Image (tube, rainbow, N blue to C red; front, top):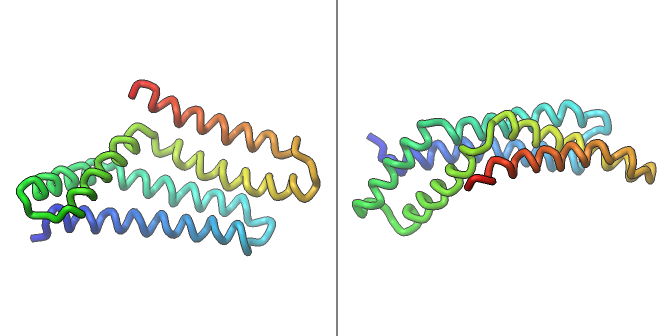
Length: 150
C-alpha cells in the first residue's frame, strides 16, 4: 500500500500537470497563437485552471495531507517531506477560500485582457482596453474579499 506522502505527491503531480498545460497555453498565446484564437484560448485556460483548483480543494487532498502529516510526525518522512506538508497545508487553506468558478473567471479574464491589451496597444487606444482592465480588477477584488476575515 502506498503511503500518504506518496499518494499526496502523485495527486500534486497531476495538479501540476494541469497547471503546466495551462502555462504552455498561456505561453503560446503570448508568442505564436493566431490573432483570433484568444477567445477560445481563454475558455481552455479557464477550464484547466478551474479543474486544477477543484482537484486541489477536494476532500481527498486534505485527507492525504493529514495522512502525510501523521507520517512525518512519526518520523517516516524527511525534512523535505515535512516542508512539503507545511507548504501544501498553507496553499490548501488559501485555495479552499476561493470558489472554483472565480478561479475560472479570473483565468478567462486574464486571457481576454491580454488579447484586448495587444489590440489596444497596436491602435494606441488605451480606452478600448479599459473594460478588460476593469473586469480583471473587479475579479481580483472579489478574490481579496475571500481573505478579509482571515
